[in-house]
Length: 213
Image 1 (cartoon, rainbow, N blue to C red):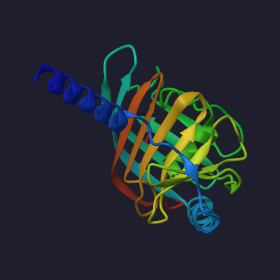
Image 2: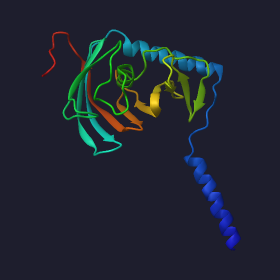
Image 3: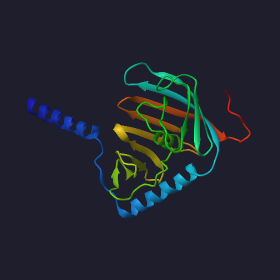
Image 4: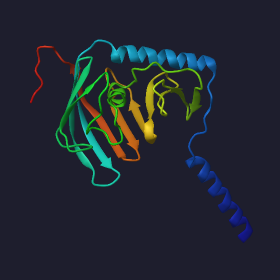
């Protein structure tokens, strides 16, 4: 009886470890890769094409060391520069800043994200870089396409053809819930902590409208 119980316990441990293990990647079918790349390019053209918008997010940042911070994040985007203002400091001491499309640092917005291009990819819902088809794998039901910027960067495409995640340097991962114009939900997690943004409002930003101070 004891032997049977031990065998059953061992089987449960094996099953639990299999369930908790990270999904094993498998090479993606070429047709699936071509479709995923096409979907990412279409999403990129829509997100990074000429447009102006403003959005308001409800945010929560939980650093690896310290207490969780909750507040609101307002952003405006003119196609080249994103300006942001937070009701409370999120990942640092600043309450406002700008992120430029070309060059620049991320500032005090997300824990673990140090390059502006990576933050913009998360906020716009898709990287500006065209993904690579070489070496694509299927992991956890999503196609993982490498990005030319390297350092572990990749874009994750769901079976429905939507961009639902990003892999970024230093083990940072971004989970996205696609929406009309910008993601409805953005979750960033990595060694430095976790950040969650939930979209409250989104709309056009007329050129004549001056951001509130």
